[in-house]
Image 1 (cartoon, rainbow, N blue to C red):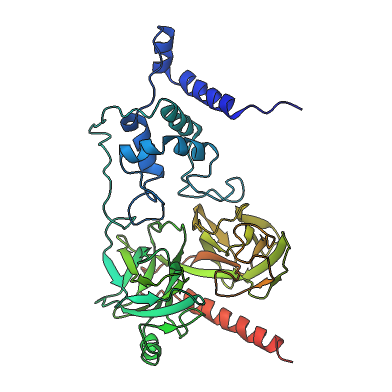
Image 2 (image 1 turned 45 degrees about the vertical axis):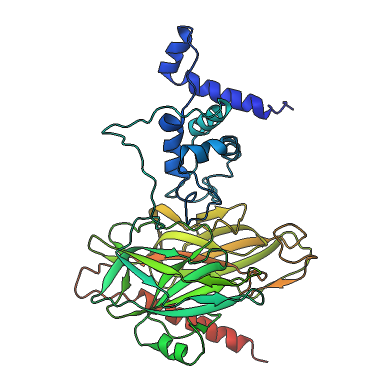
Amino acid sequence: MGVRPSAGAVRLARFAALVLGCSSILSSAVAGEPAAAPTYHKDVRPILQARCVTCHRKDQVGPFALETYEQAKKRSHDLATVAEDRSMPPWKADGKFGPALKHDPSLTEAQITTLRAWADADAPRGEPVVSEEAPAPKASNSPWLLGEPDVVLEMQEDFTVPATGSDLYRCFVIPSRLSRDVYVSAIEYLPGNRRAVHHLMAFVDLHGNGRIRDKAEAGPGYTSYSGAGVPIDGDLGGYAAGNQVEHLPNGVGRLIQSGADVILQVHYHPTGKPEVDRTKIGLHLCRKPVEQSIHWANATNDRFRIPAGESNFEVKATWHVPVDVEALGVTPHMHQVGRDFRMTAVLPNGSVVNLLDVPQWDPSWQHTYYFQERVTLPKGTQVKVVAHFDNSAHPRNPHSPPRAITWGPSVSDEMLVGYIGVVKKGQDLTRSSEKDDLFEILCRQYMRKLNRERYASRP
């Protein structure tokens, strides 16, 4: 058995590889000149701007900012360490399982080596590098990740979350005031209070059902633990911790009809002191004609019980594909004792298509993973999820000592949902005769499932 090299030896090898791979540095070494250390402006800032500042800036999920030299220098050794162990930037999917994924922020070996060499050289500033080809990046003061939205929807009044008590699922009706039908390429959720907001979902209401429910209950909004709690006419996805918004591919969008209400469901978790929230939704409109509308189906299991002390409890879920579709991406969702998540598709011919594997679940980073190429799922395909939960004693377990955990809405309960974003294969909404009926198909399928479960549960 070989001897495992030390961390210092690994860092030295990485630095040597970078030096040998760079002809200009190699020439200096041959001439007897010492290799120049990386500098912030020339080498480090481009890495941070491309991979870190999205989260590490004001009003975002990062616990500190990395927008200036002083901020980066203060944490230079920490940056190198988390880059070397690949805990940052966060990316939980196994890149060797399933189709290639978009938006992977993982650093290259050369970038990791640069961060370590910069930290070990006491983080030199260097001179700003500006050219027509590569102007100096500018820090954004906007809280919106994709820039200012075309339309901003906002809760109509503040909502106060009590200091203690059970988790709340509150729905707020927001008039869109749209004068025409629009397709959106990205929907960005901006929590008004990230301490108290656990996750968000939004729905389209064309018939005023949410307003009726809202008037019947005192205070801002109304309580609903199951989605919007009223019949809806469309879905607008949602937000969970660490989820990064991205534009949909050209030709794909989400429809919001003229005059529609948006029902925003917010899961609040009391923090120990009163919290005030006023969440916003940013709509980025499609710039090109939309041929297909994306909808999010899901494989869900809400009937499980994880015994106390069980460290590797398996739960499965299945979604049966009702029509020919193309899958664009996947969003896993579990809570605190989730351990791993895997999604596959069993096609009607029996062949298996791998979709996503998250070998180490982290509830703080619930990404939406988009495929680089669409995955065709014919009618009759079974989308299968297999997940494991660790209900032993560990820091993330909300119960000490551990107790049995079942499906439930609270952070201290558990969930298993595998969302999958799909478009109807062959759909072309630019044709006047084409109808987007995929949402109706999914709703009918869901109601049939509920009715079967209700019938099966009768004594």
